[in-house]
Amino acid sequence: MFRKKLHLHSMIVHVIAALAPLAAVAFILLKTDTPVLSFTNDTWAVFVNLSIPIMFIVSLPSIMTGIFERGHIYAKWHSAHKIKLFSSVVLVLALIGEMWLLLPVNGGLEGAQLMGPLGILIIIVNNIANVFLGVYGLKISLGRQGLSSTSYEPDLFKKEPFDILTRVGQYTKEKPKYIDLYEEKK
Image 1: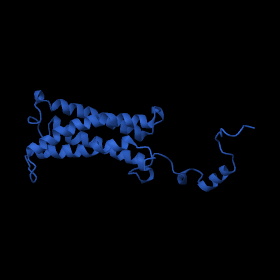
Image 2: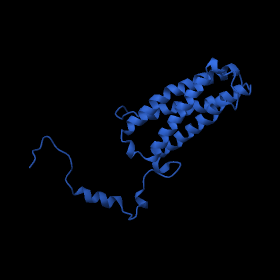
Image 3: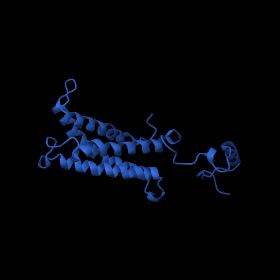
């Protein structure tokens, strides 16, 4: 169990994926003055006021781990990785704007309108960026099972279809391409 390397990026992005819709729903319920069970406007305000800074704090290591785990070969990144990076930057900029608008000097949460600047950022921009991050994250990690076309060309669809077992059989006759330190080179 502990022999596999943990994929830090995959673990921390789920915080953002969970908090973006939670903040949007809490903001809508707060601005429409809708209590649900024992959750009142005070609870919705806490959800909004905590979700946005937490998403911002988590998004920074999320972007960094996404970049560093992909390597520094930006020119060779597949378009899905570039779209994810762009969506992450849009999300961070939106979160910075939201935190600025949440300051009491700027009206805070009490002065915000449902479809005002803060509402648009929380409800629309965060969740659109979140959807792009999720869709392209699934496309990258699931490949053939992804929600859209794959980021590679499957063997079956290549111009000259070939059987992978035939190709592997060709390589089995070759000597391994590694250096054995205990064997002298002849």
